Image (cartoon, rainbow over all chains, first blue to last red; front, side, top):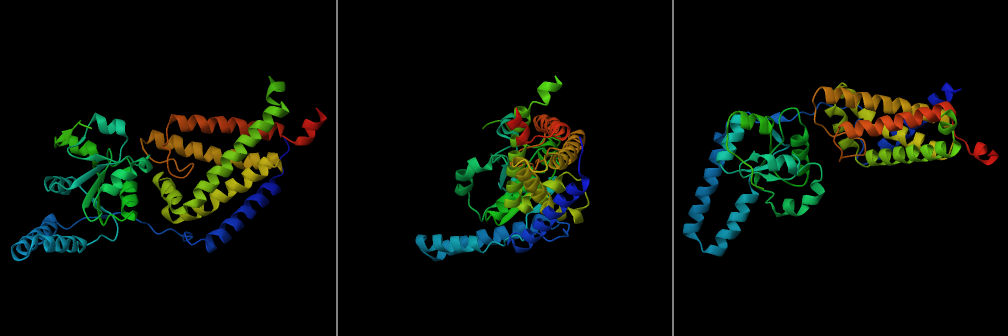
Length: 196
Length: 145
């Protein structure tokens, strides 16, 4: 059991040198020092959100009055595209999540299909983080301008955030991450469903 | 029992298996370094500032050690490196399981959650790499047999 420790040191040193060179030339390379990246909390009350939404509805309605149907559809699409995009997913707490729920915003359950079947936030859809590759059709059917909220079981799980970041990178412009998750939701006896 | 464990064919199989697993794991991590960095940070064991250094260097240590192991170069030394890495990974998984974290393992890029299954896999590889440290594995011995 004779181990040559200088050899170990040499192998590790060579690996580190290769890794630093590779990272330097890799377009997806990382900074050597990581800056803390935390989800920013959505601190604004939803009033701003509601105003934007009602403005959108009003303007759309007025357009309907003025123009013929086809033009309205074009304008609608244009207006939707103008919806303010986030710079990164935003974390939200229970109160805000419930407000969004009441506004019929789409909730995405990032847990496994088994956990989803046991119970989930009412009207949520299941896109499990582990295996999201199999849900590409579901994801592509969604409107990327639509606001979405991701969640998992609670603050101890990370897949709501990971899922939120993944969907944001896929082009979803307004992604909220509900940190309290399903546990906090059920604790407050908010509407749930066990339907698939 | 000692004869069985020091059997050169068994050691060869262990060497190839662990070598290829480490090459695969390293390549998966290199293909998406940011995802691996996020996985490390989810363990909440290290200061954020050092996470990228781990994410950059660890996969290459895995790949180099894995390749050298497959080719039978410095088997004992590379097995020691792999044993130490596995020991740290296993410890991290155990701590996270005790803390009740439900997080991505980060072992082969995205896709596996930490759990008892993962722990079992790591323990098996720990035993394998320990055998390689103790008995080594080189082709000359096989030829002599």
